[in-house]
Image (tube, rainbow, N blue to C red; front, side, top):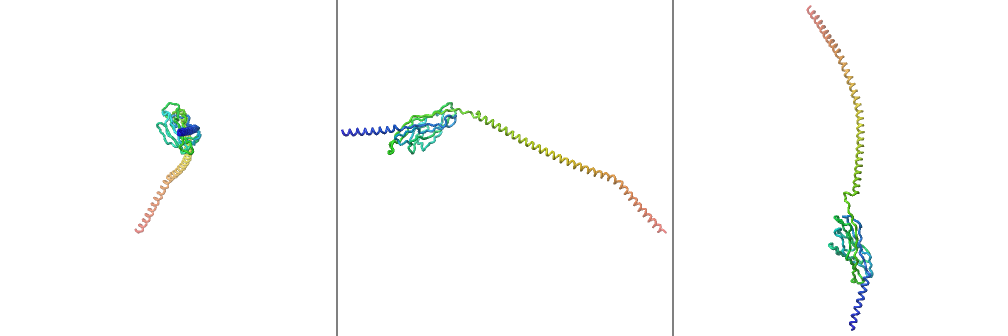
Length: 285
């Protein structure tokens, strides 16, 4: 009889203890939140989804250091690229096939904070206009005692989701902005041509000025040359005149000289003959 009473009392004590633990666990709640980097993206663009602890009520718990969840996303619209952890959280398990993951932290977290960021890229060969990313099967492990690390409780949270809008990306060859840039480039080219024409005109003017100056110089030089030639011609003319005059005078002077020479010779001959005659006559006597 006493043994039965002892067993019943033990069962009641255990029940009360378990009830107290459940009450304390019931006071501990949390949620996971999804924050997108862009609400609207073009096909082919990248988008980030950051997972955060939100509305954490630790109650009698010390905090949480372990979280698990599953990412659900339209694989026909979005393509998974990579992830980055935040605030000393570590990815201990990640399955890319079903997108389930488990994370831990070296400290017990008792406040809201970012835990991980997933990067996706919108596909290009699609016609959908919306894409929804969800977190499902969310749970976190909380430590329920400061003294006893073995006293833990697993707390579940509701599913959450985030929807983004997709915009059709314009064709780069027909975008108005690029056409405007093309027009501006054309204007720049025209301005360049105008500048080149201006430079050409200036060069032409410079050439014309140079040509004019050269022509003037040549004219001046030509005049000097002509004057020189004229002077030279005049000098030559004078020389020729003098030569002609000399030529005209020289013949008459030459004839006179010849006559005088002949007369002188004849005189000598006559004198010799006279002398010879007188010597001959003297010899004969």
